[in-house]
Amino acid sequence: MAATTHTVSNQAPPLLGYDVFSADRALTEAVDRHLPPELLDEARYGLVRLGRSAGSAQAQRWGAQANENPPRLRTHDRYGNRVDEVEFHPAWHRLLGHAVSAGLTDAWDRPGGHVRRAAGFLVWTQAEAGHGCPLSMTHAAVPALRTDPATAAEWEPLLTSHVYEEGLRPAGEKAGVLLGMGMTEKQGGTDVRSNTTRAEPLSGAGEYLLTGHKWFCSAPMSDAFLVLAQASAGLTCFLLPRVLPDGTRNTFAIQRLKDKLGNRSNASAEVEFDGTWARRVGEEGRGVRTIIDMVAATRLDCVIGSAALMRQAVAQAVHHATYRRAFGGVLVDKPLMRNVLADLALESEAATVLAMRLAAAYDAGTGSELAFLRIAVPAAKYWVTKRCTPMVGEALECLGGNGYVEESGMPRLLREAPLNSIWEGSGNVQALDVLRALQREPMALNAFLSEVGRARGADHRLDRAIRDLLTELADLEGIEARARRLVERMALVLQGSLLVRWAPPEVADAFCASRLGGDWGSAYGTLPHTLDLASVVERARPVER
View 1 (spheres, rainbow, N blue to C red):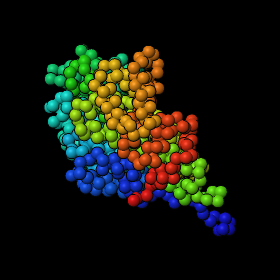
View 2: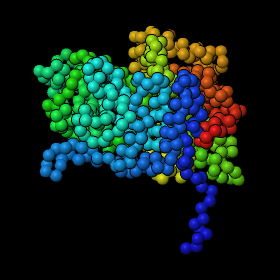
View 3: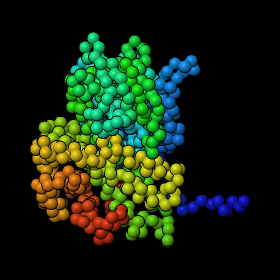
View 4: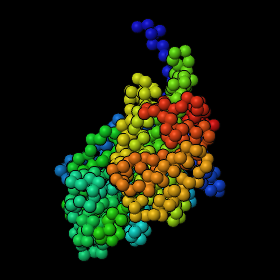
């Protein structure tokens, strides 16, 4: 065959060998904004190193390998003994090791720890999203464990360690551990109060034996798990180690691994407990209250993880359009493609700015900031995670047929996109959680309104949206049936307020015109043509500045 028929031209080069952190202007500005000046140099140094690793060919190869070679369940050894181990491709361990060493499970007591970790999580998730599950739960378990000071003293240094050690051994023999979660059961799902797993007390203080079945157990290769079970006083939280201090395996029968739409690199399992030893965390009957702070922290990670998928999708789309020529010019210069890319860039920046604002509230830790989080986290989790799937799908389409093939990486992003909307409570759960906060915690609404009110007077469309929101909040008639509509508006108003205060004028103007002013269609690429779309797209282009 003639060599001339195989000449390759007009193909965008792969987006590799760049600093994922430094190339993201919305993220770098958020870090500069939310961290104290004395922490910036050290934080930037670490994030740049992580960003270069995330953008490297090696990390991209690890991500592909971890998904092409999903985890395998090994229930028995060669002699017929139950071992219940999950085997992962070496690439999975390399991804996790890099993440742990970068401090992505360590935030709670580090100065600026939540902002630094959120930025790092957003950067590193762009290399591969599946291994973010154990990272998220290990990080989020800390506040739950702190309800029992003795347990926290034993486990927290291992959870926040920057050392990753694979393999099942007693936690006391390891320099660092990972932690998973088992809350849902097949008869109840999100309704954890219907759980039937039983907890029988032993003579030792706080010791129990658990018997039951967990329908979704996240990261079953972890060293320990926070689980819910019914004790005599009601639903209670327990810490369940995989290996007991004497080296024997705790009873932890993995029945099967879930065959999931996406998240292929990560294992999710059905497990059974049969006289499984566990230690109570918190008071009996207060299991939901004990574990709720862990749930809130993982919900924030759902927002951050979705923002990461959005950012990588828009980076790939803008990169492709910058190099690809069609109909006599470069795609990025075509007015209609520019409109699509700008619309995607707005969605991505709004998600990033909101995620980082929530992380900063965790670092502040004041009463008003914690009250703000009570509404802002479920509202953001509802909206940002829901926007992720259509946004990634549109970005994939920007690459045309090239985006539909596995080698582009875009199908993996699209398969991953719906997960964060489901994990830790799907859309209705988040909307109802916002309603509960509105009805029971007036300080939360006051803190939320105070936050959005900081931008009043800066944009007439935002001002009108705030007035309309206040009208909706004053009308409680049929509130549950319209909860999604209300929470969507709350999230959009919050994003608009943040962008008006902190984003360049062209970004804030385009967001307010489309998302708040109503000058927007039903699909991406329907922004008003009079806006400065070229500047919005250029801001999103993944190049270091």
